Image (cartoon, rainbow, N blue to C red; front, side, top):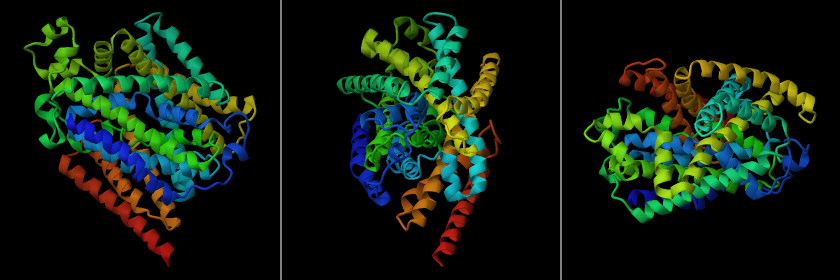
Length: 491
């Protein structure tokens, strides 16, 4: 339990101290923001600061810091270190700098910013890659909530149509009409749920595995996990530590801010808040998996069913959504179940809707189309909706197959994180600022994504040590290229 409390304190102190350091390095000022200079009543609209924070938090969070933290804790207490260090020095820094760069450059999307600092080839490649990711996320977050809702009331396809219609509305409507009004309420419900669970966790004060008890792969012996901590842990826990998906969402809020000085609270603060969400759920999962907590939160029927059976069977039965439902219902009662429903259903729906909207904005910049008329928004949105419907139809026909695709999506978000960190590093170097704060995270994430590409059985499936050697070589080459360009610019 001490690891949880120390980690919680570290995240708060990280925001107060390191967040201020990152802010001073970037240097926000009082220049006119895009929301004022380019106000169009659709995407560029000044919103209150607290709404921007809530929308940013919900956009980047979804169910990522919940499900990812639960599955990440299968590896053991090492998850604490990744959430804390990854969030402070990686994710929050990544979110702040990418968000502020978008704010500084008229609310430009990630591909456009990447082209500005990494070149036109990188821009074109990232347009295609990011569009693919946005549509995959959008399609995935239609069907899964529909399945859950159909178990409560109505038919599955009815909910599919309702959710997709909502996506169409959030993509087309001005940002203050739906997103600006509904998202803050859902964000409040998620924060209240996490706060309530955190209070119960402190009251229970269970004996849990601590960081100093060992950072090895606890899941290998206890659950039969075959994945190694590196790189699997750093891909499994993405949104709660570092995620490139955030850089695709921040430009939407960069177009709604009235001052650059709001950046630390909106971008760095939202990521730290998400890290706290991941920390709470990781600790609950530790209690659930390693401290026999499952016996206290499960019904007698479930306990009887699994008593005497292997823990491998146990963890396969208690997947992330099941853990959320059981814990919330047992710890928070009926009201907790309602909050769990909001977290499991509303969060992915809002994230999916924001993904389609981000796809429209990326296309608008790629083709140079203004979005003030309904016609222009519709022309750019129709291809997005068409591909989303095709992916959705494929998913409905192959529900098990999409689980494999989603592993590529999780890896893809970390690829975008590595690219974004390199982009921020180049910016800091060009501005003669402290680029080390993003260089080291960029090198680390490059190592993670390349190693996962080589070693994952769903991609290349190479030998572990061979994969590690190849990933090290790729990372070294990327670093040498950066050093070479820096030397050339210094001449």
